Image (cartoon, rainbow, N blue to C red; front, side, top):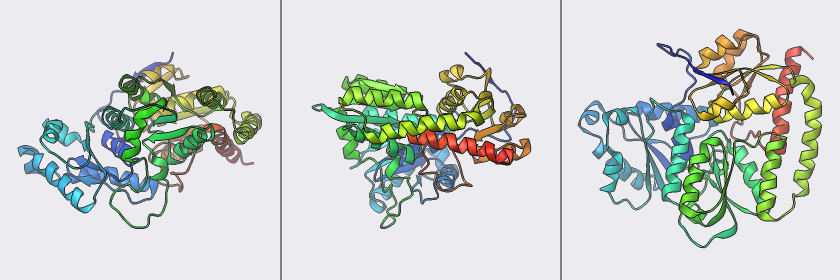
Length: 424
């Protein structure tokens, strides 16, 4: 068990933590025809929009209730109602995701109570996501839990239908790979949220002002008939429990699906549930991964790695690299969660990128978002860009490090960085 240390600073000059409304907005973008509506000032929404656009390099529908000094003091009830009415008229969404911000939370606005007095023709899903606590993954998981509590409808169970509850650290490309794997085993997946068809970088026929892809509201309602739930990511544990309580169906939780053992366990689970054998494509990819492990372990074993990522991704990557024989020199998380105590490192820091730089000296590789570029240059070590945001690389929406093939790509990306650093 590792020692988890929380740094105490008067100011964070190089912050790692991202806001809950940003994570909540990302989750809502995985629903087709949805639009996130942030209840706060225009600046609260502008921050999230800029981050999402720079990472995905796509137009991102995002709306704000545009609180002013006066409405903040007197109350934002009219702002909420008018904003929703305008969106219904102009954007014609299928669902509106209403997220609080620090401004509305500090005021203590009873948003849930306000919504109870309204009668909108579409679902308006409210989640409490104050900026001043939690992080991106917390806002994202709160949206998934709110969806599980309200939208799926019970019915006769479909034994071939599987609901996928997917964590915030999965890219659209990784969501697509997981759906493809489940479908290849003869099952019908419904991913919640489904970023694979909304933030994957496709050209829509026209600008619609709402999410142009993702799981539909009708599919989420039908997901209540799934006979089994797969939750990917520790942050999905609570949502999976809520699902089990509502529909009395079993669930399986996987912290991640990166690595040979993790992928084997997922496929074994799918084989057990479907009764089908593994398709030849995945058998062949497993053989390729075994060869890749032999080819790359020379470059990774014994290397010292410094990481700064959201808790779930930090845990998955740390265990994977430790399994490859690397040493986790320092692991930094923006928030504290129980899983940090099980990271294979002597000390895990709950802090910022300043802590990563202070404890990363002597490491062979840095793994964090594009915010780590100046740190990698200062330390003179290569950087593997991972997490959010990545604004100096293209194709973030399609990158995949899950499954046999994704794990191969991760091994090659890391090993090639070491080869390049050695001057070969």
